[in-house]
Length: 640
Image (tube, rainbow, N blue to C red; front, side):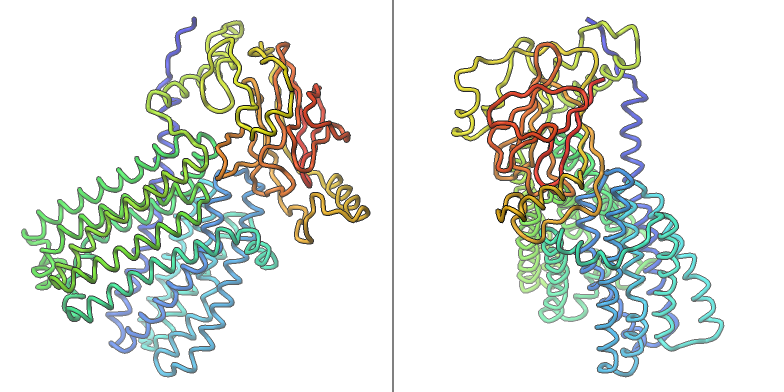
């Protein structure tokens, strides 16, 4: 038995990389927030009240368009293309950013159409916004694209370019003594255009405007739900503010806004972690699904600790001069709100991990349901509290509702993880998996371990669970009864295979020739087959995926949220081949280290080297054999 020592550098490097990506999220959000905050302050100190009001109206409109664009473009990109290979990422980003630009063009046209109706100062502000809205939304989409591929530093640089480009524009306006709000809005948007142009060079991707319709239709199951989710959150916040003003007066709104401003640094961290937390959760889901629950807990716990620390600083420092230095005389009525507001923010921070997990799982219906219920809770709690105790009562009600929302979010995440068939791992299991990974890497690189049987691949199954030597878990146990009974009737259980030293690998790609042949055959026969309608098209992008064959079996299919089925070769996409069944085929290891394929009864059959195999028959495989599934998918088997 070989003793395994965990090298500290390997373990710590993975954690350091994750912390670094999270840190870039906070840094990027800080630059973005500071840029917008400085812009607001500059406009407020330069123009009159009416001009500033027009700018605020334009900014609120921009926020609405931004939430729309993120829901339709950036959020699906983060969920489905985080941690993919570079070629796939570039193909997806070209369509995503092109869609964001199209949304910006459509929204900008609407804003320009409304501008003459508003007239006056507000009309000028809307003209400036309408002209620059396409590049504003394009710049924002670059940020999310960089976080999806794990390049947070590029997102930070892009936002920094926006800030640097904005500075000389504001200096020029001040030197020319310009007071027209149009030029302030236009300068702000034009600086974003500089950053958007830099994004093309950073990503080496040109936005594909023609891909907008395809992007929206392919991701409509996520995009429109995320759009509704973003709108629900914004609407709840706006209605709560308006209701507080109506019930308790504008002074109460000012006190709550003052407390919110003091807690702003927490929100910067929260928004930064939220931006990078989803792609990080998606990355973990791809590589080690059992660790998703643990990551979500750590993300929420870390944010909650930050909120506790900053709230404690404010409670101690505000009465000692910080309050009057930051807010002047208004700090005194705002101070009693700090404690309940901090409790509320801590509750909201606990949402972050659950939100990241639900988005990573692409559980858009559950995510939308959680947001609607939590938003209703915060709206009702804030308004009932305002009726009972004005500003203080509103914040207290918001604090209670925030924790109710936390329960809702985590309940939905727990249900989504169960539906996905993911079994969370314990800390001990996580350590064992890490030791196994290190041991296997040593076996591959160290001649001294080549002949050792300790921690061999035979001791580890493709589902992430350890198996006992000499046992075999039949694949039929996870099939419906009628399928499990029809295959291999009366055949005894297969013993655990003795693996050869040379590994087997299945390489998954798309085959255009096979797709065209299948489509032609279906058209000539008049049957629907794999192509149930005219919208099943060959994917415009497709990444090569490799699966190392381990354990006793490797099940091939598409993961289903409604069936308790774990797949070792999950072909759910993107892109998703609609012709692949939920459980399409099973690769089964033989005692001599070779592999065979079995079709348990898929809807469209399985072809080995162009010949369809009978259902239930075990067909041996050889090096270079090609398995065709669905409409375009091909698995090529490699030995050695």
